[in-house]
Amino acid sequence: MITTNSQSIIFPNLISQIEATQQTSHKSDLLQPIRQWLDEIEFHNRQLAKLIAKLIPAQCPFERDIVFFGRKIAHIPPMCKLNPLYEQFVGLRFRALCYLVDECGEDIQSYC
Image 1 (spheres, rainbow, N blue to C red):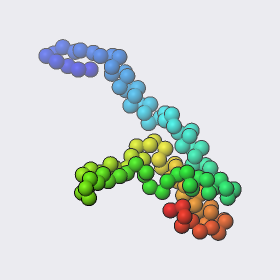
Image 2 (cartoon, rainbow, N blue to C red):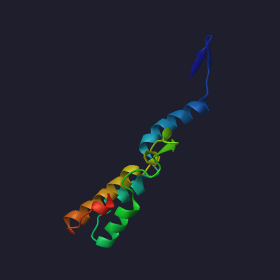
Image 3 (cartoon, helix red, strand yellow):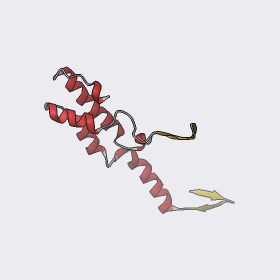
């Protein structure tokens, strides 16, 4: 409710939409089932763990320094953190690498 000069102007639709958005933004997350599924993946297969470790990069492939005639003129920041599933992918890659080291006894230097 907005009050101006002793008059009440009511925007019921706008206010109810804002309140509904605030209440549901914490309760419903459309990506939550995918996040949960990615977090629950366990590795029991060497080839799958190797594939995941190779597919998910160790650092953001988009981060770049733009160099012109030997001078840095611009920097493109890492954009991977804009991915809403970034944490799950990093965790998945970490679990794959841990499986390869702990269970398979592999050297993971080539994956880093």
